[in-house]
Length: 177
Image (tube, rainbow, N blue to C red; front, side, top):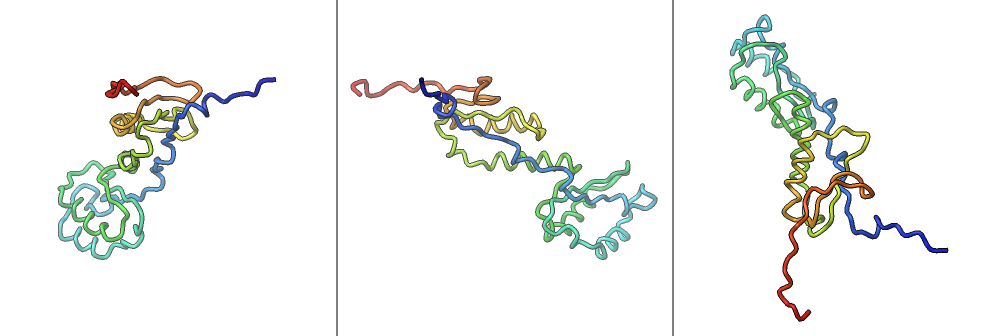
């Protein structure tokens, strides 16, 4: 009886699962300017500055914070900047936009921080199936990030992949070898 050989395991393929790079929007705190507006429409500078001075900023300590305004109001840019200046010493990071937009931006940052040396000259499969939804933008970002170093990039599972990129073969400069 012949031994069963796992050709996938022997192929030298490295699988990269993007799920660990996901930041859930629910884990992001929101700083909403709505409560600081007069009648939810107008920002009064003096009142806003006073309210920010007495606001409990410790609640954002160590958190990722999305700064937004949940009502349709004209808010000057400096109002967001002022909130960011108060958040900076407390929050892990600050972003202008919704928690969903911030979650996507945080994921893109994590992907761009991937150490590519682990994937240099390797056959890489970007995992395509899983329980965690992955934004399409993440697949584009990881492809862009790994293409300069990977031998090949595939999408899917090691047993069933879609080829994305294959590095051109380098000519043998020493034909005697």
